[in-house]
Every structure is written in structure tokens, then in C-alpha cells.
Length: 157
Image (tube, rainbow, N blue to C red; front, side, top):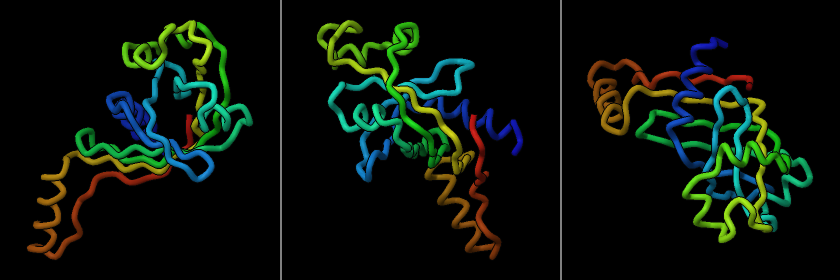
């Protein structure tokens, strides 16, 4: 697979803030954090959440992204692990995270989770909903298939 597609995937992923993490058949809305030159996704959660419990067992998980605005749709497969890396926590800490943990980064309920992606099915489009409708209309007039962008599977990192 072309490094260009992987780079484009990562660039768009950095502009998307949320996705759905599937853990043991349950989908959880999560906000991922990315660090430059680090292949992992970082999540901040509470210690007793289903995500933290799954990470304690190094569970496999899927993370899905659906962003019309950024032209990115992805089904990412990987593994969860607990992390106590204070430097990583400092890098991903945000105002959003602080609203969930009263004692900030020192909150005893806070748990950093590392998600190591292994592979992903990715769709990259150049246009949002209006572009989609245009392609469908054009296909109906010309009889050609609509151009829906790039669809591929990639190995990560």
C-alpha cells in the first residue's frame, strides 16, 4: 500500500476528534489523541469503564471513524493496553479531559489507555454530502459508476 494513502489517512485522522470504540460488542463514544511520530492512539478514561477493563486484559478492539466534513471513514482494528506513562498523559491532556477529572492529571480515577492499531479499512473522499449527491446524480445521467474516492485496506503503523 502506498505511503501516500497512509499519510493522508493520518493527516485526516488528526483533524477528527471522535469515533466509536467497540469493546466486547459494545460501542463507546471516545475522543482519540494522536502524538506526532507515535503510531498509537491515546485515550483518557476512568478506571472502572468497560474500556479500561478491556485494556487491562490487552483486549482486541475496533475503532470506527465517520466524518463527512473531513472525508474520512475508517474501521480500525487493534489492541488496547493500560498505560501509566506520565509523559504521554502530559502530551494528550486537554481542557476536555480536565472537565471529566476533578483532580486533573492526578485524579486517582484517571486511566490512560494506549491503542495500537494493526490494520484499517479506509475510505477517503474529496467531498462531503453535496459531493456524494453530485456523483450519484452524474452516475444516473452518464451511466458511469460514481467516483467515491479511495477505498483500501492498510496495515498500520
